Length: 351
Ligand code: PHE
Image (cartoon, rainbow, N blue to C red; front, side, top):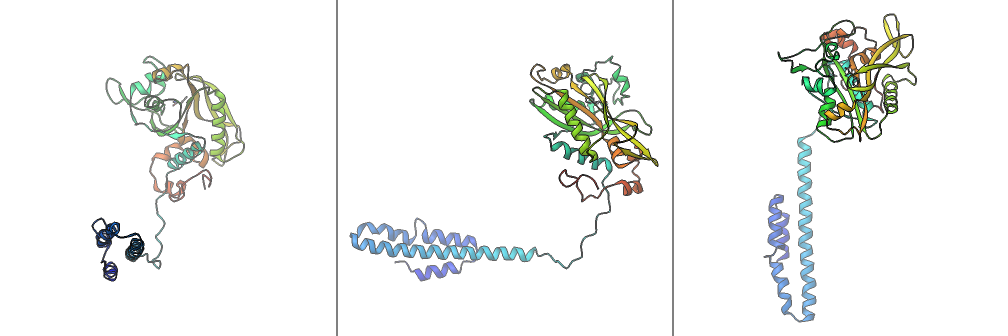
């Protein structure tokens, strides 16, 4: 016979879940007393069997209930102990706001990424130290091509095989070689050219865009850039012009300028009669697609490369590009952004 009272008492005295688990298998498992009693049912006559079965089921249910209740009780006390340990003292003073500021270039990269992610671009990256092949040759810029001189390249070895990338375009090649079309990416990153004046620095930032799919046209490129520029400058209308241009890796190619005017030395975007070039773009040259193992008969698309620093200058009225890289704390304190205020499209991009 099963001594129900004793079993239930032992359950109620279990110290932890492990002990309870052991009791459960002892009282209800295969070799438990109650299970043995169930097995004996077969030898009884029908009437006795019914009565005995119902009382056994009743006992089994009581044991199960006792175990479940005990489990809940142990669980609750565990949670309470945890809560007790992690108690937050709400009377403590708030932490001070951080002192540092986000650099305008980082801020602008976050803003741009947010804008392009809204229309399906994902972010890709590549290394600053590149091969001459990815930076030039694969981009349809052979060794004797004049465009190579224009880039004022920093080479890192005598044979001119390794260099600091002069643009983010080599990531086009890397991306296409490591995946399968279609592609829709943006690539923010550092780029280097041996050049320095008010609007040029030896290290600067570009954002590459690449959209390869079936039937992509120059119309998509214009639509995409129009959307971007308006979102970025947070205006409904902006003066923008496409100028025919040349890049070895696009055909046709264009450069895009944005209208601005100067007011008390500050740049005001969107109006006025001055133009600032912000990006180069075009339809990806079939040779580039071939070099990147994409079939130009099936796929085509556009690419663009924009100067992030210049966009930051325009948007936030910063006049000298070189100040971006001087690490002057007063400058950063003035032009920098609140680290807790991450830009998103839906909540607003800038202050
Ligand atoms: N890589 C070019 C530059 O640095 C910009 C560009 C990118 C032009 C993609 C066309 C297409 O000037």
